[in-house]
Length: 221
Image (cartoon, rainbow, N blue to C red):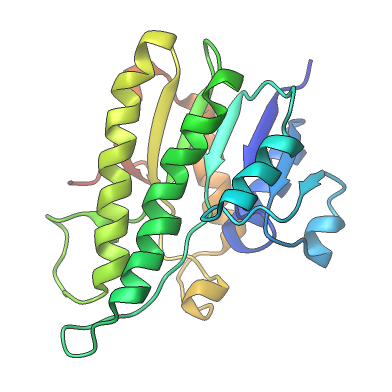
């Protein structure tokens, strides 16, 4: 029987590449997004739209679209990047990033936890910019802070879900050529997703709560 994977932010970029990669491996893909795209529609997977992960109506759309579905792999991929500096501090954009990047993934796992079971996996797509030890350039306050908060939440989830034999992976995808960075990255979304899928498929309780680069390197907190 094919396994079910749920991916947030699946209409473009890494999320779209996840959908393609998991489909190619024979998974039943449930692609969640605010609105679909031509490329996502062309994959012929299960597309659930109007899922704005930072809103109550978006969470409701997710719940309705996934009703009765057992989830083998949950990939919390949706995220946003804004740019603040000490000299141009936008508290509203920082709050927005916390809502989408940190609070939404936690709420999604909380909401869907009864559809996870022994052997299910949760993958949090974070960023090495959430690493405090690795911060050598400053700035990007909202993104750095929200991803650090996501890392903290993911670590707690790895502990709380372990008794149910549900593993949690915490992954930095690399500097990926997506719309988020104006395609200035050094790795394609397809290559990044491929690396991450391999890590997710190998994920078990012995690796739960470990913060990893897509290339397998363990990253500092």
